Image 1 (cartoon, helix red, strand yellow):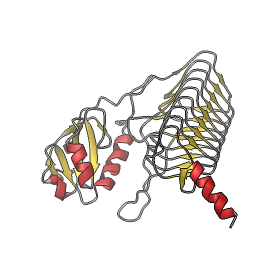
Image 2 (cartoon, rainbow, N blue to C red):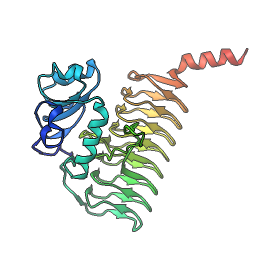
Image 3 (cartoon, rainbow, N blue to C red):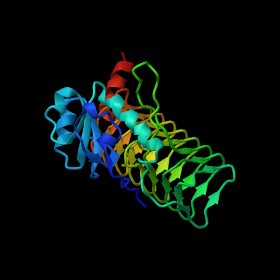
Length: 301
């Protein structure tokens, strides 16, 4: 099962001051400049993302600075703080239920769910799922058939975002996206899987192992038949392709791409993309053989 973007018919003038609207525009949801669903409202603070947004037919409106607003060909609102304004609007729309993904809710057959587990009625639990004590399943979570969720795991919660209001107040973004977990996947105790911010769900594929106390960030993608050992951090929007192995206490930075069948050794800190089949290690991580050779030379003095 997949989730879909909401079928809203909204306009900039419904929510934002008319004196700052350069050109009114319609939108159905909030997203990023590389949105793949029609009717996206995005924000842009630099030339790269502005060009990406106006060249993307899925983007129908944007919030940006005056420098870019004056040459914007689509619906546009000018702001001194586009990112802040965007997430203020995001929280407002989320509170009204206007950003919620479209999906089916329900529970399959032959599930084993411990009575202490807390499961949102706005979720879908497929056949044969096992959910252990004190698990929390939030809104807009899909769990595939015969998947195992161990004790204390939290799936579908808000993640951390670096955002303050103009008076210094820390703002929390109330994540309106979803989580989709495949079939025959094992998520071990006290792990956390964060709900996505945007329509593309935080995803864990089929037949994947997630170790104890591992954190999967908002909008991250973990493919099929992956192995992620305990105490790992997969930051937001990272993409882990099929067959990847990540050993204990490793961290993968925001937006990083780890290609198929790569292997990341224990305790690695990964800050750049990893090639298919590559084995890396270290802090910061690079080719494991080079890293080991360097270590051996240094250890011999």
